[in-house]
Length: 329
Image 1 (cartoon, rainbow, N blue to C red):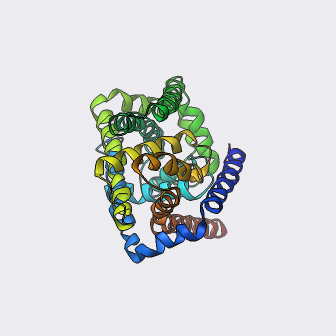
Image 2: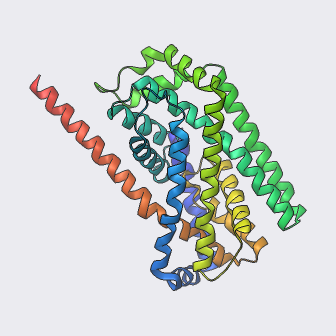
């Protein structure tokens, strides 16, 4: 899995480099530099999406023994940052999320069950999110040549999500727990694989609470929609005004393409290609579309990079404390 991630990373960076070279790196940088420091507002308007996504995750805990919202927000921030910046096949960040809230006092089996179900919630949220994009594509552009491939791609994504859920129902939770157990072991992180059956039952209980599960999916979808403000503001700051509905279509379709190419970390090159393809429908030139894509990646420096550094600091302290404890014993 990780070998595929590294190969995907290499492929994505090659595609990104070729696109930048083909459409003119200087022109693209000029577009970004013209907007200047104002582009630093983009991570700010994106941040509410992370908060809403964390509220979504909070529904997947027992109210009497779940972690605090601030702990969930911090773990979600760091987990997302890991999935964004590191070639971990979008799984490493989920493992880190479970690990962190366990370190902060949550039971290991509760953390594992919630993360597994949250992964399903993330997948299910992509379905209404993708449908919104395709409906807006048909309504705003009436371009059947683009709509047909978009529908095919979305159908493939939906089938993959359906298969993922069926596999979960078949009892993959215990196996995933054993994988998670191989990565982290500590006094606060017990041998999760020994509790596989209990994790299976906790996951099924979470699914059976239809109200909380659906609220989690709705909030996760809402968090995706909130990310649209980043696109809308970026276009405004770069002197290419579009409506919020147009920004919503663009964000949805690009996100769908990114998720189809999940094996390429952070959708390097794929995201940029998506902006070029769908941005053209809104009158955007290729160099502007590339500049827009790079502008949305500013949050990777402002939000995700500090998240990875913070996670490393926490894990380093845990490692040092464990070594000191082992030395004393």
